[in-house]
Length: 419
Ligand code: NIG
Ligand code: FE
Image 1 (spheres, rainbow, N blue to C red):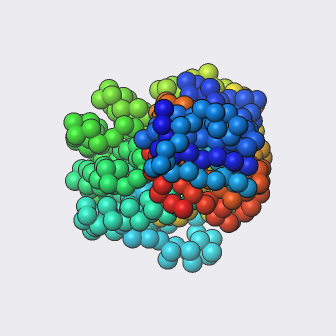
Image 2 (image 1 turned 30 degrees about the vertical axis):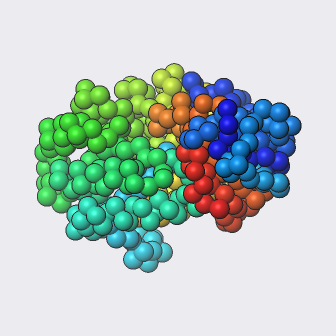
């Protein structure tokens, strides 16, 4: 078949093949296919060749209008997948930096009506069109860092109209921006001030009003919840997540971030696709998550930015057979960072994951965490032509080069979007 895009002579082509049906666990998480002098070709938005340049020269048909690129001295990876973001929100929270430096804890800022609730005020005040513009701007920045598919959550409306507005904004961005976006309803992200005296009433509102409308309009694939001390209890989380499953949504949980109140156990009990954060996850939960196949989606840039003194026990999870993904958690409060490259570096240094493990965790396993492993997360014939070229001599160089954007070229759905 004739190629519309042909990349050849890549220093290394690096991807995990054969893991689209099941996430990588245990020792397999550290295994990755490295093809020296690699080549990749696409017809339209689909990959038609992945292999060595020598083989490609025999097989890939190049025409006058084929875009041919030279990958010399570059590492080629599948487009990065960010499985946990809060992409769309009004305002920003740089004013919290001072409070942070004075030592005021994250949950105290929230309890005082700041934190998530200050972003809720700004998001409620923004129009749908403004939210779309804001989301596209961050989407552009993500693309330039090599991210081509993301998950994006609501959760800054906290009333039916504004949660729906946020999800509609996500749908608009998905339609009009090169990024592919998987939408998640996070109506239970915090208890809004209107329900401060009766949080259970808010849980009822989420179950009886928000979720049915989200499902009716098909605005989300996943439902998530912030299961945390002083936010939503495990019982409240169970009620909301079961109602979401009854409506056909898949589930995720912000679990065990600050206090272990049962979030990870609940994820295993309900068969959540992922449990996210997991800084203080107990050993029994690790066993239960492995048995239930719940993905641990770890967010080490958040841990770093919150200045926590302990990171998620990634090595124990990997040893225990839990599939592990890494994501940014991009949001205006606990992690104003969507740089998966930085996430890879922090994961190597503080989660003690190897370069091969972190690459799998931001590609194929991240794709599994959002139900997209059949189409993205690896360079394999038939998958989407989402490709990133890094200015690097080998893949280990990526987490090593702290804080530099080494991305030179980004291809999304077979189209050149950066470079
Ligand atoms: O995943 N933990 C709860 N939610 C977000 C933070 C949201 C915010 O601070 O605005 C998180 O870290
Ligand atoms: Fe989050």
